[in-house]
Image (tube, rainbow, N blue to C red; front, side):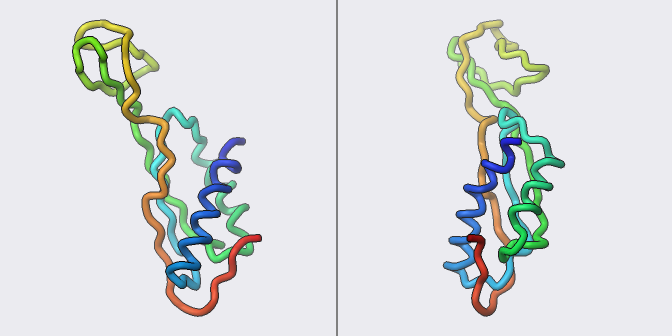
Length: 122
């Protein structure tokens, strides 16, 4: 379950955001994730809820949006979305490709409530 290790870094960032913005509570976190990360949504939700316990993100909604795997053909310069794990250019059939997107793990947005002191995870 690599979801836990990925989220530990996110929680470090959430703690910083809550402290800097003086958030009393984080209510919603949106992550944009490349499909090559092979995230299992249910496992990610479970990991998030587990790591959020005792922090200002406890009870927060986790929204996951997934990015397609986008490739650039080095031969003909066509960009395409990978389907069925086929990494051959649909325009020219070349296998000389470059990854454009699909490995992202981006903290897209954080919503919260302003107020008193924050309680961060230790």
